Image (cartoon, rainbow, N blue to C red):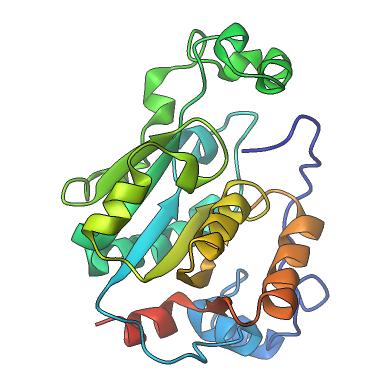
Length: 243
């Protein structure tokens, strides 16, 4: 989800916009305008800390109809990243946790500055929103159960009631992160995982946002400032390392 007046410039995944130079020729030959898993290998920092442990959990953030369908919060690139997200979730659905962003019934029910936020986005309060828009997109909804669905009222997955207990039950030591948006809920969830000492692996071709500059900046930040705590890799490489 977006801050109040966030820019909605769309990602332009060419060799000037992708945060690290990628192989344009490979993408053209693959007829893939969005960087594929193979192309993402070129820009990732790879799984430099080795294979993923059996205690790995896939944390999929807010892949909901609200962002997939033609609403003011629609994310154009969500359709492109969805296949990679589905592949990750299908690998071990019983070790996948989906979050859903759930707004309040009305602005007055929200705490503090969230009241101002929802006064601005009143059309996205539950008193006005179609309930089906809060559901996971169908290709992911079919996986729950055995996948777990956790509802949250704020950006971070780790602020959701039950998230900590869900990870403890799975004895999680690593999270693979996918979902939306790169610079809002994914960001908050990634930093929440870092704070809890989890190994964090971001699937490059399974996240997206709505603003070019902040999406690109966040991927650069993860590599340059969190290199000992955050790894970025293509979903294909992640799946190869996740038994």
